[in-house]
Length: 258
Image (cartoon, rainbow, N blue to C red; front, side, top):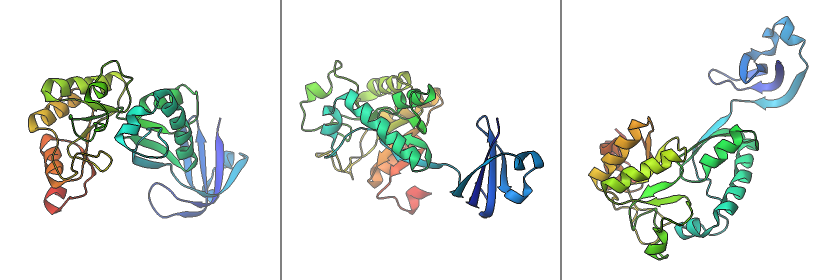
C-alpha cells in the first residue's frame, strides 16, 4: 500500500532542499521524492500526511547502548546488572529514533540483542549495527581497574560490554565470541581512555601481533575493526594493523590523517 507525505520543506539525500515537496513510499521503499507538483495523478489521489520538514534518517556512528545511569566508569559498566542495562537501552534506542536517528553504530554495548528485538518487532527502534563487547588488554581501557582482576576475568561472570584478551590466541577467541553474539563489527582499544582510571590515553595498547590477529580474524568474517585510540602511538598502531576506523583520534595529525 502506498503512502504519501507532504512537507513544507523536503531535504533530499542529495541536491538542494525543495519547498513544498512530497515523498511516496510503499513496503519500505521510496517510490517518489520531489516537488509535490510533479506527483503523478495516482499519487495525487493519495491522502497525505502533512509535516513541516522531512529529511532522510540520520546516522550516529558512535554510540554505546551501555544502559548505565549517573557516574560513567568501566566499573559501573561491569557492576550494572545486565538485565537492567538492556531494559534501559531499549528506552535509549526509542529516544534516538524519535530524534530522527534511524541507524546507529553501537561501539560497545547491548546492541546485538536490541537489534534482534527490533527486527522481530518486539519494539520499534532504529537499525543497530553493534560491536557487542569492547576488546582490550589487561590493565587497559576495557578493564575495571578498581575491581579484583580475578572477578573481572571470571568466565562465569555475565557478559557485560567489556572483554579482556591478552596474547594472539585470546585476541582471536575474543573476536570469535563477538561474532558468535552477532556483532556486525569489532571494536578494540589501541590506547588508554578517559573513563578507565589507571591507563594513560597517550600510551599504545596491544602489540602489533595482537592487533594483526584481531584484524585478520575479523576480516575472515567480512567484519571491519574500529579502534578506540586517543594518543598518536595508538592511532598509528591501529592504522598499521589495518583497522578501518579511528574512534576519537585526539592526537591525530597530518601524517596519521593521510
